[in-house]
Image 1 (tube, rainbow, N blue to C red):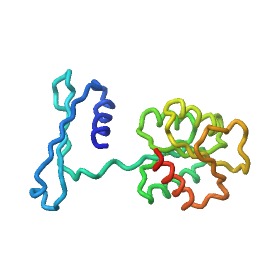
Image 2 (spheres, rainbow, N blue to C red; image 1 turned 180 degrees about the vertical axis):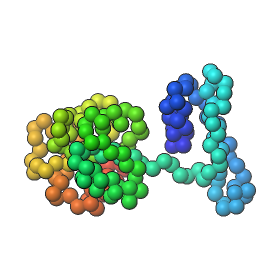
Image 3 (tube, rainbow, N blue to C red; image 1 turned 180 degrees about the horizontal axis):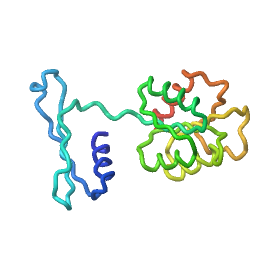
Image 4 (cartoon, helix red, strand yellow; image 1 turned 90 degrees about the horizontal axis):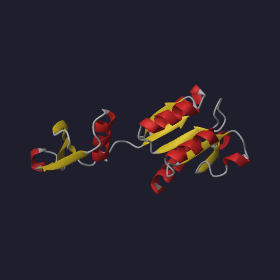
Length: 181
C-alpha cells in the first residue's frame, strides 16, 4: 500500500509514471520498539532524480480505507462522515453526483455510498458511471423507497432503505463489502 501511495504521489505531481521504488529494511534494534522499519526511496527512472524519501516508519500502517459519500443533503453527509470516521475510515464527501464522479476520478476510493434521490443526477446514474470507471468498486445505494425502481437493478451492490438502516448495520455492510474486495 505504501508503494502504491508513493507512486500516486509522484503521478499527481505531473511526473513520469515510470517510477522505481526501493525499500530498505532497517535494523529494528535501532528503532527501540521491536518493529520492523523501512525507508522507501522514489525515483523517476527517465529523469534520474530522487523525488522523495519516506522516513523510517513501521511497515504495517497502510493508508486508511477511503469511503466516498455522495448526497445532496448536508446533514446526511455529515452523519455518515462522522460515523465512518469514528470507525476508522477516511471519508470524502460530495454534494452532487457530478462532484462525486470528479472525486472518484482523482482520489483513491475503496467504497462508495450514494443517495438515490438527488437533484440533476440520481444515484443510479452516478453508480453506473462509477462502475464504468471501475467495475469492481463496491457501491451502497441509500433510498427512502421500500422497493427498487427497475432502473436500479444491477447499479449497486447493496440497496438500503434509509429509514430502516441503523448505524451499526451500515458499518457492517461497509465492512462486508470491503472484505469481498
